[in-house]
Length: 357
Image: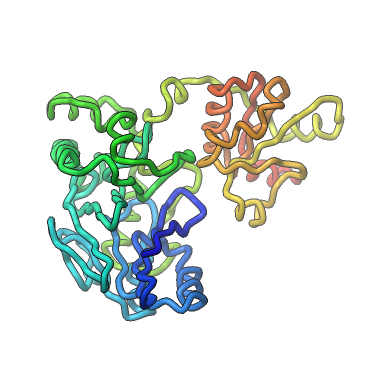
């Protein structure tokens, strides 16, 4: 069996291949990468037999329906999934065998009513039911979410061995997959609490606006294959519960610099300025482009890769993104790591271009 993660950003898609005959399964595909998935299957001479969504996604349009139509594969979800285009509906304890590769489904509601976790080999794909380390888990305040259900599902993990490696459907800050045993020590959702204590813990967390996510859910209910079926912001860790970053990061105050001031200071050249663009690599070549000389570290990798720029801890560092949200988080992460002079480019690359720069 071969197992790999396909996407370059925070939404994680997994490819599982039976190397004996090239039968392939894709878990949690994203519509923006539909053509890439098709090309990859063709280039590697793989036959897609099944596509699986661990739950109805609220932050992106699934490519499940599109892959089913394009390849003739089966589309698998939990029996509670509202989607009408699902061809195989599974329940807790069901096993799907693709020759000698076995997928065991565990019903883990809480984030959604149709949430599945999947064991394949020594790997546990958890969808949004469980993230990594201080990422906690997916939020429970969307349609179908229920913290009481989430607590019950988390208790089911007690039955599973420490050695399973956790692979979630999202990772926003560069955390690396690790064992369930590690998560039992590091993940706040897995700390021992009564059901009542857990519900209070969830209700006390600061959750951001979620109205736009309801439109994404509706698009996925309807099996949409249109990447533009719902407006999706690109600057937020949408499904992760706010307040689950390293302690204190969310509260760190950061300063801002206007696009005109940054332009003037770059032109003067009288000081050392390090510009860190925290967008994904492909965004730097997109319509908004990038500022000459930026150092690119995607926001999901910044907590780890900030070590690459430790020599600039005493210099002025300016974080940049599309409109400022990711850059603000990036600046907070850098200040937490000991960078003393960190500023956020106010308005991001949108403001930079709108000002003719």
